[in-house]
Amino acid sequence: MKLRAIMLLALTTLLGACASSPTVTVDSDPAVNFAKYRTYTWLARPQVSNPLFQQRIMSGVDARLQAAGWRPSNTGEVTVVAHVATAQKQSISTFYDSGPYAGWGWRAMPAPGMGSATTVVDTYQTGTLVVDLFDTANKKAIWRGTAEADIPDKPEQTTSLLDASLDKMFAGFPPGSVAKAK
Image 1 (cartoon, rainbow, N blue to C red):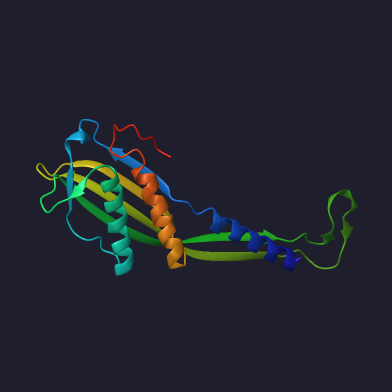
Image 2: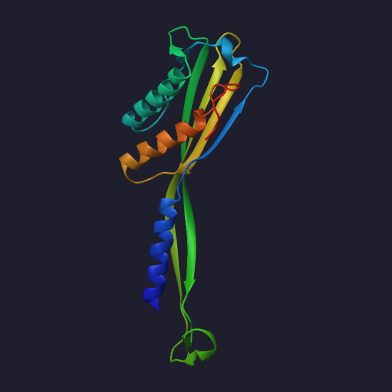
């Protein structure tokens, strides 16, 4: 019975790892005409402990803004700010075996011993990426994209997750364009 609980735990963990796709939300000021903007600048580099990930964030945002027809400039009409936050979370799962009866349904037979419970605590990290765009002239927020997901252990998976997050975040950018969100 313990083997069954371990197998169930392994399957649950595997499926949970596969299902980690980013949750993305986008908000913008409906009064802003995004067609008037053509240039952007970064206010500061995102504060991340890994400088390679910092570069990936900036390159990813740059690529998507440039795909929308914007170009980088030292005196951009729009100022880009990106923030990253991480948090540790726990998942607690308890699995029960069949107890003093073996088998399934009406043919269950009494068996010696008591049932047992196996509790597994899984600690993992989640990350949130926030990209804000401000009108440089009046310093008002005009657009915000937020992506949240569980952080994978391997760098290549983290890079894939970042790309997927930015793709979802910038789908249909700029607001009012003919591109549809995925």
